[in-house]
Length: 210
Image (cartoon, rainbow, N blue to C red; front, side, top):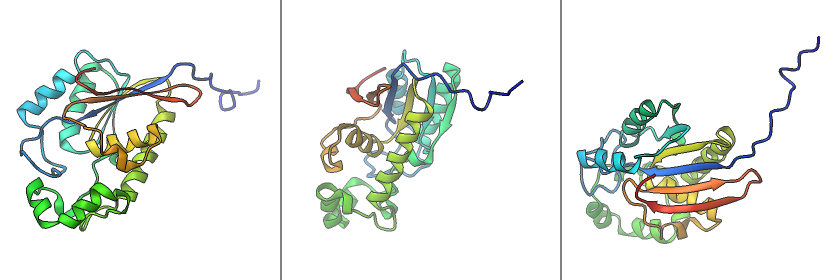
């Protein structure tokens, strides 16, 4: 008898893929330009994420490795009884010497670089950190793979404002610079739906809860 287990075709996906991109909540240390990866959520940040994810239901929860995302996402997946994954490519851009500094200090010490970040972001390279082009490339790669791996499912992605803007720029087919016009608040959701034919829709942005 012929073994067809390896050759049988999988049935086509007929349901859309819905991804909720959720920014982390407020961290312990206020007014940082970019928090360190080990910076935890503050009490208010935990409350923000709890409200944002209630009463949401997802098939899988994916997180940035940063504590401000990972800690809550892991517990949420346990509560929902769904798979949990971490993808380093969905971590915030590595801002190098700027990590852990206040927004005021960064503007005062690096005014020309800050101007470049806002007006010519694709050319920006963080001091002793990551180039914007490399950041955008890794996020887009992770997004494309997520669409294939979790096709037809409802996915929650707990991540950072920069990552969400990269995805918005890709989905809306706009320059990354224009995505900077989108306000991405703490614990707010951006909902994107991809249909079986590959068409993509932005269903909502800045949503306060699922």
